[in-house]
Image (cartoon, rainbow, N blue to C red; front, side):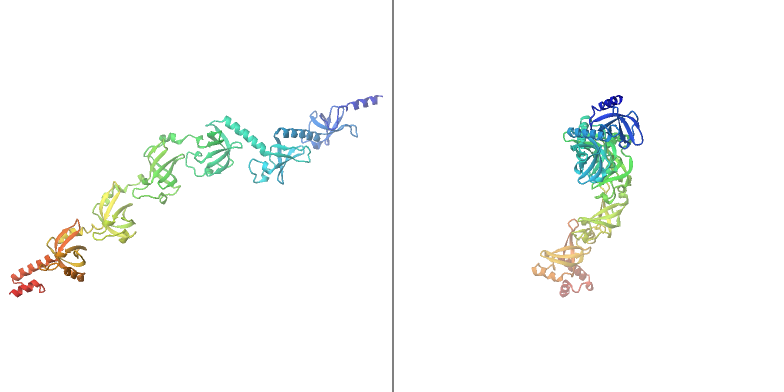
Length: 557
């Protein structure tokens, strides 16, 4: 009777239990194989140790699923693993309905995407296109990564994979971060981000899934040519927010504004006349830029590079990176400009040019360069003098200077004019021997006879080549003997005599117009008068036997 009563009470204890029901039990005993759990109905269930990641302690609570109310030994058969799976299924089902993120882990690459472990033997399939917000170049790079996923399609059976999307979760998280960023930050705030990628104009900074731009001009107060010299990919840095536009979603960041602008304290460190020795950072057609300090550059204009050379291409003198000394000539803090001079640290040869090359000095110089108007002649100390094409010769015209000389020739020149203020030295060749018309006038004054060579015949007279390599004109009316009148046949007869000598009398010399008037008639008249005078003095032997006037005198006697 007592046994029947105990059995009746035992069976009643199972009255509220159903197969598959999840109940909470208490650990009452454990050994190397099982954990015994009291499920509260005067019965203990056995759970294999293998179902636990960490073994529980006596008294710990454990959720289990009732598999069978009564086993062969009269105990309740339970499963912790099934309880977890059932709970997980409910959690995943509700997460799919609510679009709540669930934790998962990329376990392996399969066709079209990844297998994702969602826990409790539930697997998910994540398409490659939904694994990240960016294109995944290396699928293996995500294996082992744990993150949150959104369940697009849930399958309760552990044999089928639910479809999940990490991209959807990331996009939602990024938008939340972005909204929070735009709502909370202000211009001037310091933010933290990771260097994501580079462009020719700067670097993009990841601020939490969305980017801000660090422009190359905002990396340093100094001159920046390579963004990678200032930040590295993957580097986490602090930056100052300098511009934000909620409408366009553009964010501008600055690294240089983490420090004070060096221009604000420029005058505390530099004054006009100071000398700096620094590297060249940039070369242009109009000068070279020199870094005075990070953030401050000065310009040495082409006109401030040399006292003597007209620099047209600074690259012929300097290279980027060359360290040079320069003097501060002036500055404008409002425009952030500093004017520098390199030549000011060198002696100015123009200060002593008048003493070294006085007007009238004759010397040998090398032809440095030819132009259409003349040639530049090296004087020394980097100074070139200019020989104009009109100063080469008195009586010869050149269309181009290369008709007279070429670069590298050494020629004799004379200093004609020195202008240190305008840095000019004018040279001449023709003045070395003097004005030939002046020289001729001194050697052959008016009414003096001179013998030259007939060089050409024109309609208005005959040109005669004279000493000094100059020409004079015998007017057609001054040709022939005094008693011979002009005729076309007389003028024509001189054409056959080109190259022959002709003695003429100088009527007039004008050095300014470079003209000389000559007369054959006057020279014959003077000869006749001279012969007559000698005859009257009884000096007939001195009379030219070929002089027709002398023959007339003899006949008269």
